[in-house]
Image (cartoon, rainbow, N blue to C red; front, top):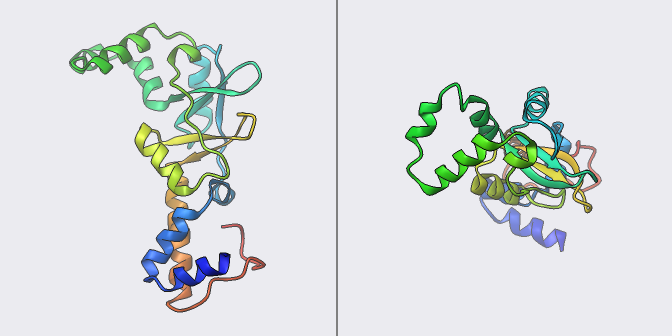
Length: 195
């Protein structure tokens, strides 16, 4: 079955081959290339603690909010945390954007939040088995720059960012370009590093 997939890929133009491989690459493989630490906070954490944790985890733009059993219960995007922090610094910016109902609802949530659970959004996450395509779609649809990666028990094990997806895309395209048209992909037993 895998050989059939490789043969059908070889019949496509080189650019399409690289795009197909990128689309089918797993989140686990993407994480293996350049891992970044997840920003994990408890749902009872004060927003100052969430801010400190996010600032300490460079490259992470989404805080994973967990319950007492350390299971993912929500996420806090950087833009939402930043809005809460600057609500009193630049309130006029919030007032200008309050025309739409969802903006009024978000403004209310931001202005009342004191703990992570009060600011968080529903949990949006990936598993190691999800594809790079799945990761891109979830980030794009939810306007998030990074997503927590969870195990079977919903415990956060890593974080995948848009920058990692860019690096994965570059790696795959360079690899396929180096192969040249008509060359077979390396076998799984190759000594090339996980990517």
